[in-house]
Structures are given as C-alpha cells and as structure tokens.
Length: 169
Image 1 (tube, one colour):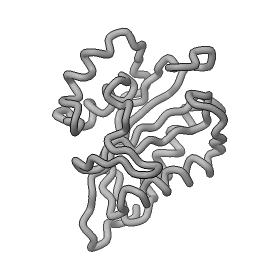
Image 2: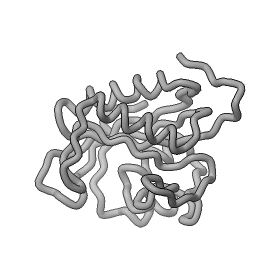
Image 3: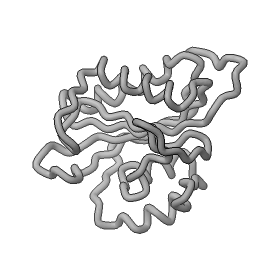
Image 4: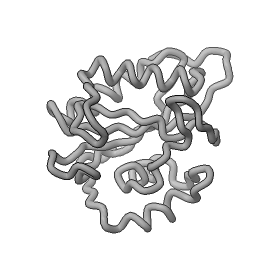
C-alpha cells in the first residue's frame, strides 16, 4: 500500500457508482485502484449498496459505495487521478446521468468549499442523494457537509429514494 509522504495529508471522501459491465466487479476494482494512489492511504470503505437510477430512470440499478482516503494529493490532482481510474475502467461520457461502467466523485476534501473550473467541493448534489449519504454516514457517523449540515439530517430528507445494502463492509 502506498505510504503518505511528508506532505500534510488531506481527508477525502469519494463516491463510487457503477451500473454497467459487472458493477460489483467495477466497484471492487476501483476500490483496489484507489488504495494504490500515490501519497495516499485507504482509511475506510462503506458497504456496497444497490440504488435506483436518478434522472434517466430507464437503465439498470447502480451499485454504490463511499471510501475515505488520506492523501497528500491536492484536490485538483486527486480529481485528475479519479478521472484516470474511470478511463482505465472503460468509462465513456455520453450524456448526463447516462449508464456507466464507473463513476468516481470527489465528495469532500477536508472542510474545503470551492468552485473552480471542473471542481466543486463539496460535491454539488451529494446532499440530495441517499446513495451517497447512507454509505458516508456509515463510515463517518458525525460527518458534516460544509454549507449543508449533518449527513444524518440530510439523509432523513431522502426517504423516497430506494437504497438496499447488499454487502456489509
């Protein structure tokens, strides 16, 4: 497992989702690749969850998870590494909310709030998605999303979203 360098380490939470080409395999492979990121260390991973698609609903269910990593990579560099993992796993971007082999979202990086070209933190829709909030709360019970509130309170507003734990962490 790669070690943390002497640079200060940030705490990052990454959302994973897949609904094409053996989603369970895709998520497990992505977690393995995240554990190999340079100057980073996998701290914790959530259980795997099955969720209904949002937006474009005529597609297969998704498998989702959240991981917590400690990393010396800055947010933009980490996002670049996530996009490279998606590419290596066959991700082709067609249209918003399309089916995908792998989706990796940088959800949180420390308490950073930013809106830069290609990077918005916290992730702009995470507070509305049970498939992000439930696994995040599982691995970081008292997590707070900057500018939004406690994950547990936000999750209580997502009661209409179908979510099923399929594999304990």
